[in-house]
Image 1 (tube, helix red, strand yellow):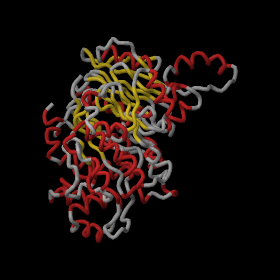
Image 2 (cartoon, one colour):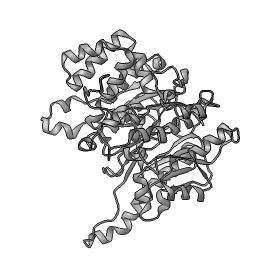
Image 3 (spheres, one colour):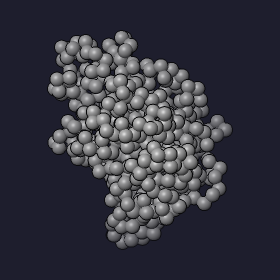
Length: 478
């Protein structure tokens, strides 16, 4: 647990994380390229920043590094330039607990050898001319970091595509106890962000204690021998939204449209070989854009409280009920869900099946976290048609826990908020909570059983919630 880089649960008190504020590249997403760049729609960048994501940053700072924000909200909010949020500015909050990815990138670009290697690697991936490669090598560090992320030169010309999904830092890597499991993205649009992340984790002094503990997913030699038309469909891919560190001994990996079975198998082999965890459970969800990653289907709020999409909760039971109607020719009305747990024990690996998602989550609560309180399930849209599916689409199941029982969600998911209140939680809008913090009406450390509602009209268009927009690198042990 050296250097405060360690995560052993989803709900231990959050102490450090990596984020990336919406950058100018998001403002360059055009309708014809939105889906290629993994957005459902174009977004209004200024609204996303000022009216939505900035609240996320202030909430995180209040919980993790309050000295950076306490007593300063009026000045911060009145500054139209938003210098407080810009890593290149002297007024930048510059926290070592709420860490901006662009700041980490700028730091490693100060290392001459790393800068040369990274520019060459990016130019190779993006097929830049040799002239542009030389021009980038001469840029000031601040400008170069922005170009590598946004693709936009200082003269506002686009050199290569933006990487708008970098706001979802969850996907670049996951801490598994004191190891780091790196992302291997499924979509070409995320190749550059994965490359930048790899250089950061292998070269930044903050992560020096991780050297030798970074796990990468690779292709095996058989892949390179396949015909080209078969290679694309057989890639080993793994994204952080499909990985959850639910207990010190237990990791979940989703098999989805973004994470492949082969990558999950390889991860299991590497983790067991190093004795990082004792259990890995594979949760295979429907390969549909509706779900994308397992953290769009469920997340944990407390040891014994989970929020999930009801239609995927007890799916195997529904399958058994309807199997007879299938035999008679009726189309099934349920999705398929497969859950297999691999247990590394006594020199061998045992396999256990779970009938449904609720049984798995209950087992984690009781068997892995030693919590015997009643397990509670909060359902997307309060499990009412059509709100379950509608609100899951806008990330009702994708929440970030800042301390056990206190999580950040989106304000647009009204029925899910109602379900949380029915389960004994209070809900409060981010702006109201910040005002209480600032006026000393409510210290953050006293807050319990609360869902913080983040403004989300534009953020939700990007198809990721607060869980996606975070890469925890240090949580207190439960």
